[in-house]
Image (tube, rainbow, N blue to C red):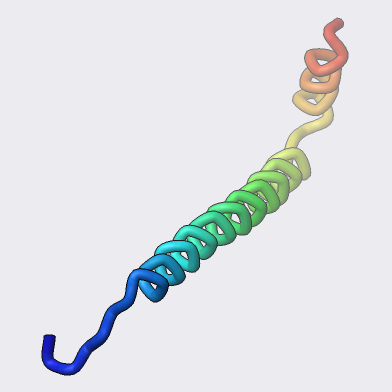
Length: 63
């Protein structure tokens, strides 16, 4: 193959490294998305009127 020697161990290491990278990336992406959702929720609540805020709080308490 033109002087390229690909061993089974090399392929295995590449596959394991790729899978590890995928799992870590997915984990960190989910954490970042959760922080963004929480930030958006807080920003939306900051703009609520007193009436809307109290209605939401009653709903959350189950009243």
